[in-house]
Each structure stands twice: as C-alpha cells, then as structure tokens.
Image 1 (cartoon, helix red, strand yellow):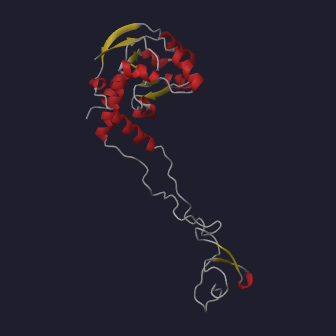
Image 2 (tube, helix red, strand yellow):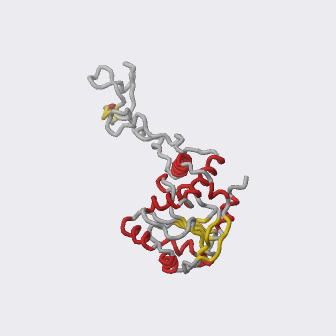
Image 3 (cartoon, one colour):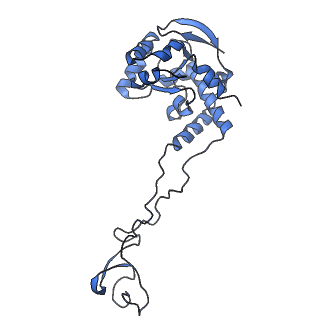
Length: 249
C-alpha cells in the first residue's frame, strides 16, 4: 500500500510504501473491546474506609447479668452508645442505624480492569490503523469529504513546528480547517496527530478537538474515540517505522 507524503504547505512531495498493518482486516468488535479495555485501566478503584461506622462506643451485651445489658429495659437489642453512669445512647454500628456502616459497600479489591491478550490487542490496533486509511470510514466519522489521500502522511518538518498557529496553517493548507471550526463550536474530537517526537507535541495540543501522541504511546482509544473507528489521523513520516516496530513479534 502506498501513501502520499505532504509538505507543511499542503503540497504532495512523493510516494512511500506503508507497512502491511494499514491493510489489516476491519474488525469493529476487536476495536471496541480494546477501547473498553484501555478505558477500564483509567478508572479509579473505589472502596470504603475500613473502619467506617465502627468508630463509636456502641456495643451490644446480650447476657442478662452483664453490666450495661439491654435486656429487660424495653429498648432494641442492638448496639447502643455507652454514656456516663451506665446509660445507653443511640443505636450505632448496624447498617439500618443513623450513621451506621453500609451493608455491602464497594470493595477496593474488586477487579475493574478488563484485560486483553497482547496478540489480540495488536490485532485491534492494526485494525484501527487500517480504518484510518479507509476513506469511507474516515469521511463517515468526520461527516465531511476529505480532499487529500489517506492516510495523511506529513513530511518530517511537520514535527519541528513550534507555534500553534503554524500547525493550524497546515490544516488550512490540507483543506481541513472546517474540522477545527466544528470542534471549536461543538467540542467534539476531530483529528489525531501521530509523530515520533518533536516540538509539535506541545504546539498542536492547544488546537480544539486535536490530540497529539507519539507512535510508541499510540493506543486504540486514540484512533477510535467512543469505540468508533475511522478517526482522521495525520502521521509524520518518522512515525511510520516506529509503528511498524510495534508489530514485530
């Protein structure tokens, strides 16, 4: 599979060969599973305080002969607060008491991460990359016609851009300025930028709806936000061999 390399002025420079990963089969099911797996790793584990509802003087003594027993006093046989002179206060500790502990609180030991096999995940990543090279999928997701060849490969000078306005000019040169305007108005995610390294990582981060990530840190959720593949993606020429290395077993 061949792709066109564009300059930062939007001009076609040359053709390059893409790795076979961009021709992988489209697997929506794997992409969705991978995105949910990645997002589950971002969840914060929830759990109750170990001694919640137990930090009280309340206690229950059921034996009739015990000091402070609740038998034969016409009060509930439940843990009561201990008051001065042997008096009994409010019911505490039990779940149905005021400020009592919860019956079945969340457990911090609960496994909330949905793990995925490494080979299965690589297939999902390969499928998401192939979706980014599919014109029908990209146009359907962005709700606009893309006037350049896909996937969009940028010359390495793109990685050296320092100012946000220079990155914005690149989108204008590629006739993608409408996507930035749409993201600024609606707040939806538009394009993804994948580079090997460079100052563009910070320069493009301020554009509305744009995400920037290195090829080594690229995940399926970047290529398919909301489990929907086909996100418009700009790759730097240096990022292509970095991506290919991730699929070498």
